[in-house]
Length: 442
Image 1 (cartoon, rainbow, N blue to C red):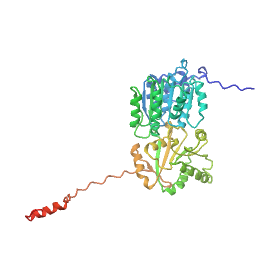
Image 2: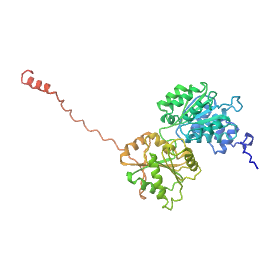
Image 3: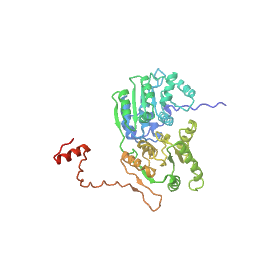
Image 4: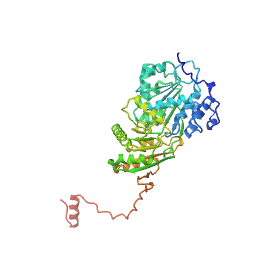
């Protein structure tokens, strides 16, 4: 017997939306029902700021850290403004993101929020057969989510029509520019209609981001929901001073003490990630309290299918400890991550912010630990200045209590010493001696 394909939920099948904090935003019943079902209760500051403005069609330049609900902030007004019965079947919205993982996440969020609408969304990114994406685009969709490189591929092939877009979103714009996507982004924007709506969302407003907004946006409304501190105040942040050769043993003792619900351990290199993963597999299997935790690792050298599988297991709670490079440092929203461990110090302050931002998502509590070697003190100080916060020093001594770093007072300035006499050049010294003797320099 032939199985019937599951029918897409029709708007008439949706439950009646319950009262929530989103009522004041005057959203459609379809969206309110989806928000209720997804357990959205109150709009975050970036959602409360972006949604009313974006619904009017104005360009939006929003600055907000990760973990603040940016995806829903632009997805909700997009779904509200879609034209389901438009004669042209080409996509109406293009959402550009920096990584494959973020493309998958945004695609899933749009589909979840658009559950009771007729909106169709397609994700296009590298590491996946392009033929399958071409087939999905050929069947028609209203929204396309993609990485700049793969979007350019589809435009060149003629499989993605961007001439009828009404809205373009640049999500994690600072990250896209950091990894060299500026030429591709500009090429895409030049191919789009000039009368489109543009939404640019970024954790920081670096000079390159501002230049991009000035060139390709029309009188954008600037919404700043960022701050000098990490956006999620519920994240507790501590550090350990360790020797390089003691990192692994310190990590194992820390995991034994903390018993994390779900932890991400960040390493700086792919080789280091693999090495630590193998070591933990060997060591944790001998520890009764940790041997049941499923361990996984992820980095750029893994193929897309394996990366998707690991992320799926992480979201489903099947992975308890993930060893990773910064490939997951931005954009991945896994609300159950309770612990972040910076096994290797991040290369810059932004990487620290985005690593730590993987926990404490959407108001939940979280804790982050950073291992600091003797020569990494200046990097720790730079991070503290960037987030405007002193990290607590932790210890695995059960009798010790975490304490904040003390700021070293500047030494009191001493009375300046009398200035030394200025040394003269040899000929000037000789002239001086002759003058005093009543002679004359030759």
